[in-house]
Image 1: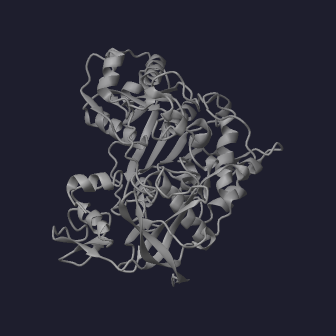
Image 2 (image 1 turned 120 degrees about the vertical axis):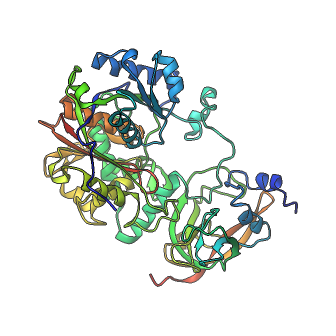
Image 3 (image 1 turned 45 degrees about the horizontal axis):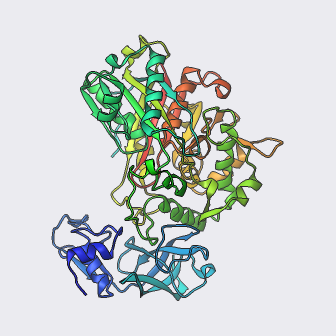
Length: 149
Length: 391
């Protein structure tokens, strides 16, 4: 796939792709969930910033995460922006997942493969990928079990 | 980090406030025309003309557009702060106190935007105002969705029934029935609330502010100057804009750590008074969940107890409407708030606070109101607090 800046901008229309977040979106094209991590202090942050908010180092690497975590926030959308494969009549679940890599490090996405009534705060999830309008989209699947807290 | 330093206390005043009233439909008027109407009205109230104004503060339209429209010959300061209106009050009061200008015309046009409502998008003249087809994908909790996401967290942590959010909506609606400027004035009962269309679970149509056309305007000047104008001045006791580092909607640490907590601790340190001394309270209500959190974070009750607190201070009417009267005395958003007067991004709250403290609130007047607390904005990057007193 063409990884030019122009291509990235078109594929992730509206997602806020810019100079600082481009490595994250390039990772998505390879079905790898890349989150910024500081080379100096090891702290992760999201969304992508040009410096580490913990130590102000400019040595940042977009680093693959496991994609495992626990649901921290949930929303079920009865309406929203039109998007390929999204059915708001269901309604459409959107969750914020606290990733296992670091407390408070979170990533938002939908949940596939489970009825909405099973999608609850505290549920353990794993990462999966689907395609939308020619680009891979990270999604979560319930992994069974609940987080400790 | 909060200090009690507050050299601006009582030195700056809001001399007047005016409104056009608000409409929950696409009117055949521009945003600028509403701003012009409100600005003319507020200058008239004070006996001022455009020549007397040397500062301009508002979000949309921009200050240069408003200056040209109103023929204000010269300004020495202007700003276009982010909403909600606490930002504008902080900017205008600072500009007056520091001497950058003497008389600020502070305006806010609320307008039904094409990016915000599908029906506004049908009006071609609205499409030029900040509308883009590059909308974020559905899997984002940025913007309005963020409040819904944290509402789910709140319900998860405290087991809150929907009725607790419903009280916020019904209080606003009952109050709006006494406000001719309000967009939504039909009685609302708990049955009506619970039957409303779900928009983003757990929030329904009545948990979200009403998109409206209309405007408010204010005169902000030195207390000394305000005393020479026609109306009783309302003094700015303290104003704070509170924010923390993790202020993206999905990275915000918890319900116990966000902008509201910074706002409250700083405002309490700077203000001369707090909740036990106020005669009228204005918690922001762009989303009902914000209001429950403000009750708790301002200290009226403990975390998770806002719904029960409201129940304890609820005045129920026979027709199924009802309103909050704290300790049988302090009304909450008596103008009808964002949910029923209209989504004014706080200009309605500020205007009503000014009118209450001037004794000009008509049928909603709190007898002898001397002090008001406004806790504006949400959790993430727009929590704000203002304490006002009668001059």
